[in-house]
Image (cartoon, rainbow, N blue to C red):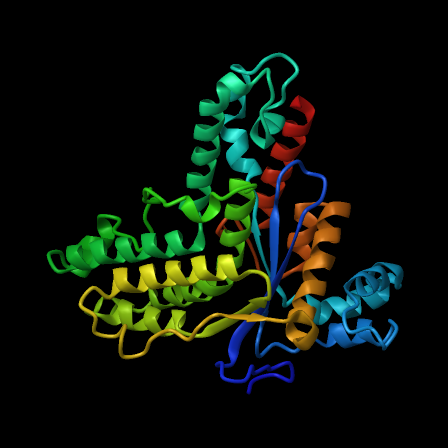
Length: 356
């Protein structure tokens, strides 16, 4: 079992990672933040914080976060030596909202903001409910287009095209023609039923499900991208074999997220059946089941929960750019986040606040 935080649940496979979530406060919509611990990483920072809180507490997230921000800057820097290895996956509806905000605002009664219109409708906007529903669906589709599962599908589609082209063209000719292993996003007719139920917020559920799914799909995307540097990825069935193994490990989430886990399982099955249409590998090695663990009984889930809380506070108190500087691996709306991209988003957040 890798790492001293390795964890096994009776009757279930060892999880490759452990994930818990939170959301950014006071931004007018659900910005979902999932923190993912890889099984083999050592998170010594957790024990440094644990030693400073009352030892009788089974769960001490609030106390640990308070302690983190109360200690000296030098001590926090020491904690970041291992805390920075926690992977953060963020799904944020705001960039998608910004793309259509001006157009929709023109149709709204005076005094009704775009964000308020999306959250609810009242007597003054009830006649616009069809526009509200279409707007919410449009944003949800855009978020799902950028979801890690869809990004992986797009890579596979692009590779299949390149394989087909390379069978016709010499390798140097294909390179001259600009054949790549990354394509433009392919829009699909997504099923929104998993996010539509009584008292549901479609964008909230999509944000939470998508950011949770990154724990399963981003390791596979990374392995696929690395493999695409090797010419043998163009061999028949090489990509399905690689991705079958990359997507097979189990991943653990906090109990209470069964709906999102079910959706992620369905996405994983869809990706695997789509890339292995000849069924050469899928039934050979079926994926290990995803897990829902009780946080009180799982130290790694507690570690992920505290890490998510610290990340939330760092972003809320500082900026998205600051968060990128503190953590090594962050995905934002399905792609790895850089300082430049984070700074661009921060500018759009500021502009959106000024226009509300």
